[in-house]
Length: 304
Image (cartoon, rainbow, N blue to C red; front, side, top):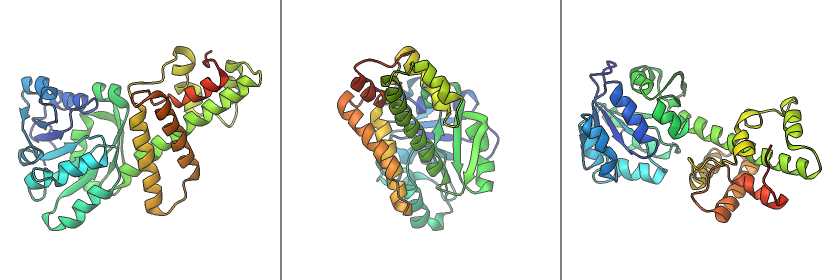
């Protein structure tokens, strides 16, 4: 794959809330696109701008210098890669596949092992920044790849992400692990913060006084200082990222811990809180909805 932006055709599979913004930025940067999705209408604006629509992942891979997947779950990734009309059926020997989904290393590792003779470049590059970052081209990207591979694909990544926050975090699989651990710690911050604010406020401490005390203490975090304000000021539990997806990510974190033989008791408990919130408020509730479990116990919303 050439590093010249206008010369490399980028295949993109998955044009949902993240992929739609990412592909628009790739197109704006001058990359020719080959695309597919379960909804053909998702590609209408891209096709109008010159992208080529293909009916199968195999056709996308065959038409591309590098093919990217941005899909909801590891099962979706597996189906798109190994299916009868999947990426492996179309990609050229020596080709490059970048999985930007939040996933686990299993599928990518299986490709490396079962197709080792083909010289494929299999790279994981999950992202952070949600649909807003995807639309603005300012995603944070965590890349698991060999150094030479990272250098080769960087121009493609820079069309979708903040150049200062495109991080080479290690060899294949490291990108997946970093993204899952970031998500896990953020979800843990949310549950811990909700619990602390609810207990402290119920004990008679003014909510903002308590928050400022936390900020001034060794217990401060970005979540306490900034992220929680969407709830405390606006009652916004971030429906832009559904709790069903948060539960999926938490489950992947627990699975990763089990696969490497590390105990994960605290994070497993956070996962249980999230699953209880999902059961209570529904799949489409926002990722910060577990906060409401504590507000319901108090009988009132926690607001500044």
